[in-house]
Length: 247
Ligand code: CAA
View (tube, rainbow, N blue to C red):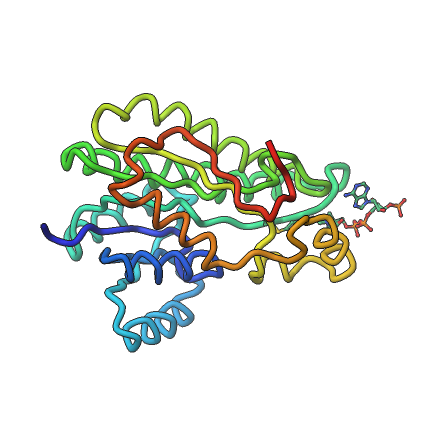
């Protein structure tokens, strides 16, 4: 069988890099998506991954823009092949209390974290249907499950991702395609390190395991969901948060 292709949006960031490396180790040809503003970072990242012998490519595209996604997926299809595994991982935070939140911070987070899921999935799902096999893995957050002070935008977007998962999972389960959500807690990435230290320390003090998570821990779960072994898991939301939220 030829190698399956996995696309990871926001693939050159903290959690995204971990996922790309794990999927490459698992035997996928991996495509890491990035935005134009990070061209130089993406090229440098790719050079490191290739030097390490990983079968990884990069693809520029703005996940908040449908046409940009169409262009990107068309290019991946012709340069690399059909995407079989899609990890909707791209996301941003623009935290602030609701009273002070400008419309722009609401729209940016909803567009990049939630509308992106439509924009990218819509462009790959037909190829998965033709192949009769596929995996859509949506990277949500503990804060989509429990809400978080200062994150009305992010919590709404992340909760919305799981609604999408449950609906699409029902529509395409019979076609060999699973759709699942992973809800990580606080992971030691730039996004979490951007929280003011005293606020971050307070959050860490509420995590029963007593530490931040690691990108590799999230990547191992993605790896399982992307495998043939996980074909009976669909429509699920799997928490990986050190016990911060139990449901
Ligand atoms: N619950 C209740 N009250 C809280 C609170 C909480 N969790 N956090 C802060 N407050 C209170 C403060 O005590 C303070 O009260 P007073 O005015 O009476 O002193 C008031 O709310 C204002 O708090 P801040 O000083 O923190 O307000 P700020 O405007 O400086 O900052 C904020 C607001 C940017 C939202 C800041 O609180 C913050 O960064 N919070 C953390 C948000 C967070 O967890 N982001 C996660 C980013 S990482 C991520 O999202 C990845 C993932 O998936 C997990």
